[in-house]
Image 1 (cartoon, rainbow, N blue to C red):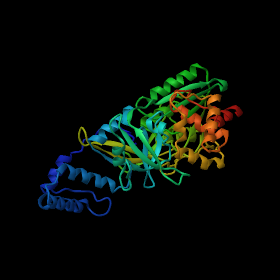
Image 2: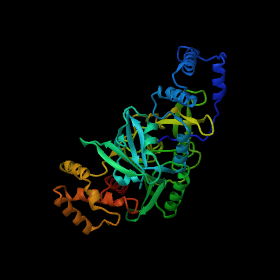
Image 3: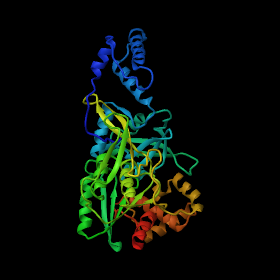
Image 4: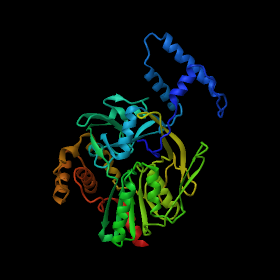
Amino acid sequence: MFKKFSERKIHLVVLAFSTGLFLGVNFSFAAKAGEPAHKYLEYFHQVYQMITSEYVDAPDNKKLFYGAIKGMINSLGDPFTRFLDEEATSELQEMTTGKFVGIGVEIAVKDGEIVVVSPIDNSPAMKAGVESGDIITRVNSESIKDKNLNEVIKNIKGLPGTKVSISVKREGFTEEIAYEIERAPIKIESTDYALIKEHNTGYLRIKTFGSDTTSDVKKALEFFRNSKVNRLVIDLRFNPGGLLNAAVDISDFFLDKDTVIVSTKGRGENIKEIIYRASNPAYYSGEVIILVNKGSASASEILSGALKDNKRAVLVGEKTFGKGSVQKTYSLDKELGIALTIAKYYTPSGAMIHGKGIMPDREVKYVDVAESDTEELKKISKEKLLNKFVTIKTEYNASTKQEFHKFLKSNNVAITDKTADIILKREISKYHKNIPYDLEFDNQLITALEMFGKK
């Protein structure tokens, strides 16, 4: 998903540019990349004239120019720089307000493939079983090979109540997994928090960095301060990111005034290097551990890097996604724009995250699944056994666990009871609003709590 890092709109005079070009007005261009740009603009002019005067069918000027803009942007080879047509602009507005229609899955281009960064919490995609790291191969039975990110997003989105089928490749599975998912309005709640009373520790899950996230986080921190809680776990797992400003403001809550949070470096005169610093004294001074994984991206990595490098937090979990470029939106019209990558960001220590990610201080897997269970889990997924056993009314308790163990045996599936309980609990939690943390199987959270206990 594109991250809107600036609300500021700069109106580019495209109409004047086009008129001047086709009337033969001479332009002066600074040749920063070798050859002067006017040589190529003349080629463009010639091709346009040939098409409009000689092509067998009357061309659509809108399609011609939209295609030309997309072609320029695609030539950059940057999946995060894109043309925002009317539909994409509307989608962007939906995303930044936290309300949109779709299946609720965050996707990005990685190594030339469309990868699921993370399914949105409680979304149709999460309930269907789509996982972080899945590689989308087909949408509605049509291969998405050679399609760009915009086209894939457009095909996945649709009217509420309609269905879309997607196929994914998943690590450890030789065959693709197919899902049919009903589209629905998606509302992203940016945070969830609770007090883990038996450990006297606060738990704060940040799901996305949107326009309301800073105020939501501050409410949570007020609750923890009033509860006299001096230990806090911040859960950024499967958080695909969001607004740069939100990441900076939330980092500010934990750092002393003037501490470096993040820096961005670009090529433009006004953005060669911008250093973001904490502007206030630390609002929360307690101990902090941050949970991260491969679904933690962009703004999540800014917060993680800022607190890690400034010795304000320890990172536990798995290496983060590695999305460290900054996009800015430029308005061409009320309904048109471009999202342009203008810089890359660097943690306070000077590390560039883009394409690399951040390694946690302590690497821990989410759950320990016996290697012997791997093949059996594939069978459970392929035969959709969880869907057959779990309904919206199913509750997770000792009786249900025993019934599930018997159900698996009756279907000739032999896995350990622990693995069976893990996948059963995960499936049931998709349909119920439970406490936001799991002290039964979440090794990363359990490890964090143990680390607090040893300090």
